[in-house]
Image (tube, rainbow, N blue to C red):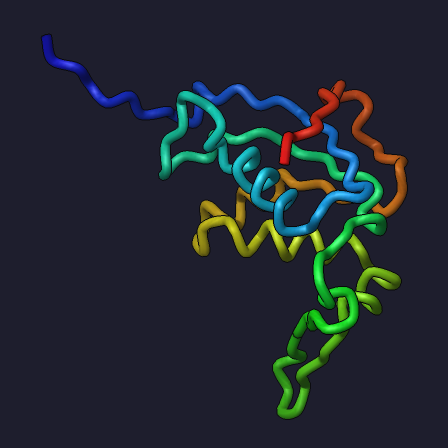
Length: 146
């Protein structure tokens, strides 16, 4: 009997919504779990060239933790595309100003660097407080084991 390799088609994808509370979670460890969930690697139907993952809602982004001296030493860069336009912020400053960006950048770095990765990152919804506007999607409470 010859076995065929299963390839997921975009019409067959079933997406769920998951709610994750980032309070006191370590950034890198939680980012890998989120990236796997968004990419669909935790499903038996995983296909590398298809976006078969789920949506993830992250709340309490400002309460994320980092280990070691990263709280004061870790730097985030962006560039204005003008000469001398490099902007730098530390983890501490970015956590105060825009904590959503910390989780978004950590997860984005773990996704494919192509059209597929750019479409996958849109399934990540990050919020500063404990309020979000996705109640109508009936998200499933998700607490990954680390």
